[in-house]
Image (cartoon, rainbow, N blue to C red):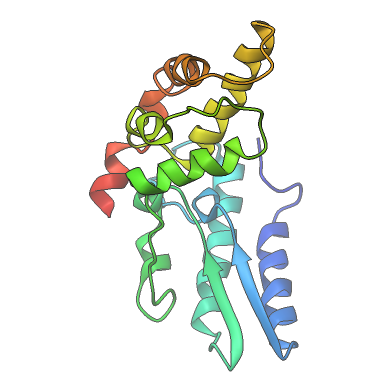
Length: 193
């Protein structure tokens, strides 16, 4: 399926976005999931012809706008991706995107803190060892940990408990983290950084 309904719509929207930024005294242009339109260009005959061409037009318009766009004063362009390895090298060339900042996976201390943050909104037993839970979730994102906490709550409700036990958390880790471990932090992403 095509990303945009009409040919040229994505490129037009990019032009309008940059024009609006130029008319403002200060702004931040934030493009999330840029890999959806800024991915490496494949050879001919790959994928959906109309959709691929439209995505390429949109990405090329971003590149074109970045070339003619000087970060005057308080106007900044930020882009985010979960897949930096798939971005088109033309987009990453110096002068277009000058800095790359990685927000990697949380370390043990970070994961422990994330568990505590989510536990504040839940009814949990007092003797929960959050560091143990964090150790059982290596290479997990904050979203993974949130899913664990939600699942632990569901398990406690099903067991008709008034609070979530450490066992509920461990069972939730086995269901959530171990269940889709293969989808967390791909090796390609780790090698890129």
